Length: 228
Image 1 (cartoon, rainbow, N blue to C red):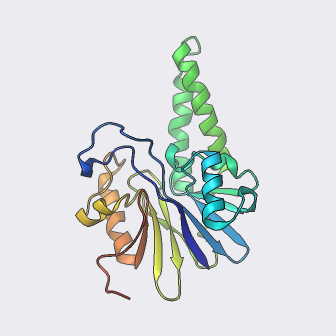
Image 2 (cartoon, one colour; image 1 turned 135 degrees about the vertical axis):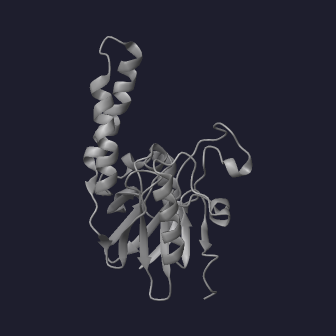
């Protein structure tokens, strides 16, 4: 098994830097995992053309060579470039699929067909539904030694990906731990759907992994673990 970061993500605003409001375009950290015949891309957060270019730069791969795409959550900036991977299987946790799908369906139902703004929103939500329908509920394992790791709280069914390397464990955390500042201060992302569950997931993430691929940051060694 091999893995590498394809693109380092960023928050639209990092409150731990004293930022308020959107100061940049947010996008998730994108990670590639190669396990056997599987080439799994996690959270393609950049637009199609940009994520394709990053994939070529970092791994010498074309989008057509990716076999699977996994979304840690259904947040828009975790899936912005998913359309570039039309030949791949798209995966998301069943809890996330249901947790976001029902509210989207209800919002669509409540829209006023005579309201112009509602019709614009309908187009956006309809595109979201199309992506969500294409995403299949992820199995417990995407490949040998590549396990789905539930980290709910920030979103209803957020899931990381646990890479079971013989030497150490690596956890792709998604927004369960977004940045190194959040990690160092023990803080979860502001605006979590369930702050209590988010804190539990944060704790579980740092208990299980030797290395962490943060949701909007780079790879870090778990500061609570002994050097290896």
